[in-house]
Length: 212
Image 1 (cartoon, rainbow, N blue to C red):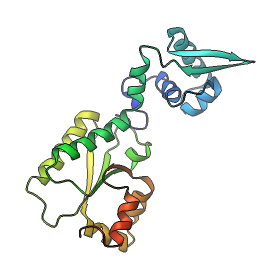
Image 2: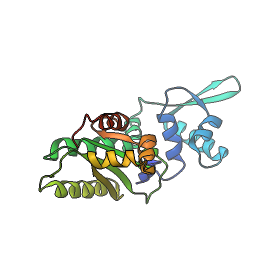
Image 3: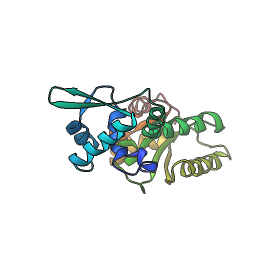
Image 4: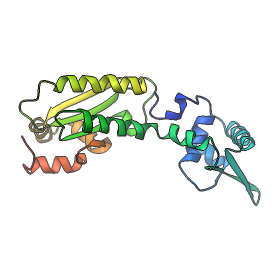
């Protein structure tokens, strides 16, 4: 799955980016603005897509002076499916959270997406990068199995491989103290999946408030 444009999983044409733009706002947009935000195709192609979507009733067009403004018709029977497809990245985050919360015998201190999956700038073949921080010196025997199971589940859900960067809170403290560049990546890009925000986590570990 292309996490930068999840709707392309089911709608690989220009219709996907156009519908993604319209799904993100309830404000009417001109065809030119939709084209600019969609970042794909030509402006004339975008207008043709909009006109076709208007003919299906999924998009509503309103003339305002010399301009035409478009808005997703959220009452349309297909609108819920469109919104679901444009929200697949958040759905992935929620599923990972639910697995960790309900299926793992021992919870990590923190888990977050980072890299292209967090930034939303990957492609169809990008890995899903997950930071997992635990506080145990001796992890339970089933830890590796539950981590491996999550990787299999993510691949089943998305077709993408899950790469887990796993470390203890003590190891994270060492990363922070030595100025590891990847810590800056986590600070900039991380999207929290489980536990506190990464910035809060760094602060707590730095003050000795977390298990080492």
